[in-house]
Image (tube, rainbow, N blue to C red; front, side, top):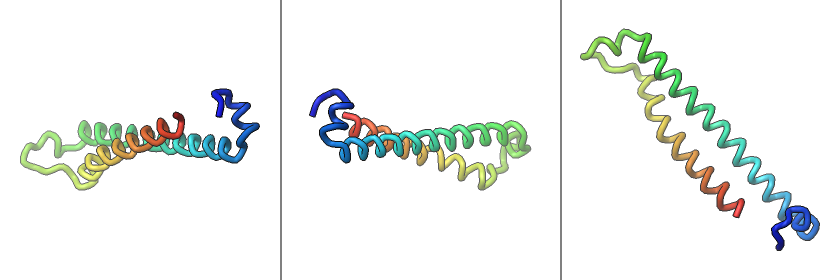
Amino acid sequence: MTANPFIELYEAPIETLTLWAYLLFLLAALIATWYLLTRNLLEMYKRWVSETWSTNTPLYPPGTWLLRAVAIPIILAIDLFLIAAFVYFAT
């Protein structure tokens, strides 16, 4: 195979188009997880500032806030898997 994508497309169209489909799918999934990550972070910050439990020390945070806090490392792990797969397919 050559480095020119047009020659690769001519020589092996199915493999080249499948590779590009994988890369586009991984990119779309990465954009979706970034959206979920920023939405979770902004919602957690908004609830931290506006809720009364953040000012009352003995109270625990609500369950939904804790679920969002647990979801953040999971989303970051999925992002790392997606970036690794993207690099693997692109090289």
